[in-house]
Amino acid sequence: MEKLMTKLMLVLMLLHLPLMLTAQETNAENQNQSLSKQSKESSEKFNIRKEKGCGLFVNVGGLLTDGIKIGVEPRYNRCILSIFVGVPQTGIVFKNSHKDWESLLSISAGIGCKGIVPAKWGGFYAGGVVQYERYSGDLKVNTLREEKDFCENVGVMANAGFRFQTKCHIYFNFGGMCGPSFDRSYFRHTNILMNDYSAAYVGRDPETNFKVSAEISIGYEF
Image 1: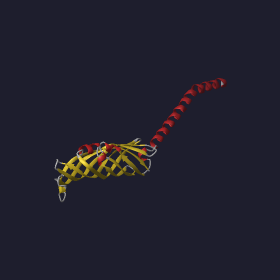
Image 2 (image 1 turned 180 degrees about the vertical axis):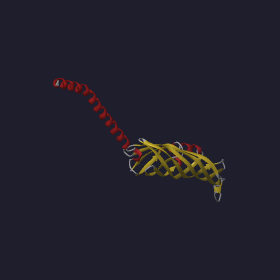
Image 3 (image 1 turned 90 degrees about the horizontal axis):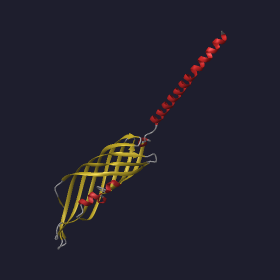
Image 4 (image 1 turned 90 degrees about the vertical axis):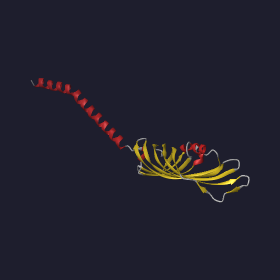
């Protein structure tokens, strides 16, 4: 009788052994999945890998519109401040709209702020920019008259785009800016035959225009 009971116990143990091994494998797999999920959740997103940073950038997208820009972008977590200077006459759109001007000189400067919605690859950003622009040059009106023109404008523009940031501190911004521009212009004329300019600049009526600027920039964040 005892031998029979012993044999039955051995048979039952052999029958339960595959179930026990399967349960152990399932537990191990669940533990691995849990660890993998925790590792993914704790991994740092590229654009907020550190709380603070300061980037130097060049916006080559301005070559298509209102000129190349260079500047700095201090960052505190998800808030990015942008300070830049530019040369409007290096932009295709600007040059085409002033193709009749001679001796054209220009400069621009601006400041902006944007917030970023983070993602592993960088994130989406949106904000605003205030930009001041001034330029001057000679404009031939007719065979007897030329003008020396001086113009300035202030643009208040919305700014949005995508930021791609790498672990080697290089980042890329792809977006643009658009909004109203408040323009003022002044001129003084001359008689070509007499080579005589008017005594002072005369102001034209102020104008409000719509301004668009491309943003394709590359930067390095310290």
